[in-house]
Image (cartoon, rainbow, N blue to C red; front, side, top):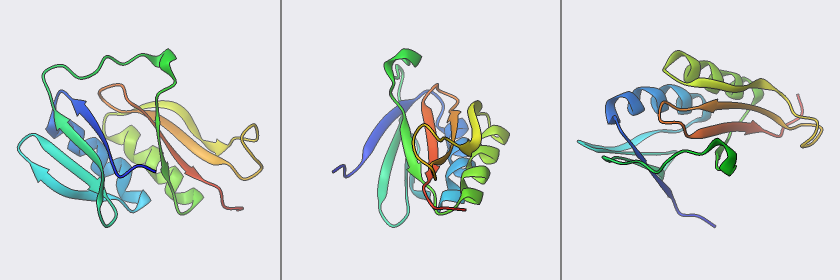
Length: 125
């Protein structure tokens, strides 16, 4: 459905450190880097990040978040660990979410600009 998503951030250097660490375990990397922009994906850019003076205001009650596919539960764990070590905040430790399904294994974090992120694996153990 989507070709890509774009978000705005205040500090592109801080953002790169965070997303490099959080997305690497999921098989995504920075495929495009400019003075004020980053592009992440596996083979093609699917997440564009640009440094802007006024990012969109974050509202925790808006239910906006981005969910990334993970190839394994270990990748979900590593996503969470990488995010925590690079400036992210915990928003739900890795684990099964039985409310969503028997094999819904996910972790939730908040990036340095307040964007809510999730890594998800639906594989049985």
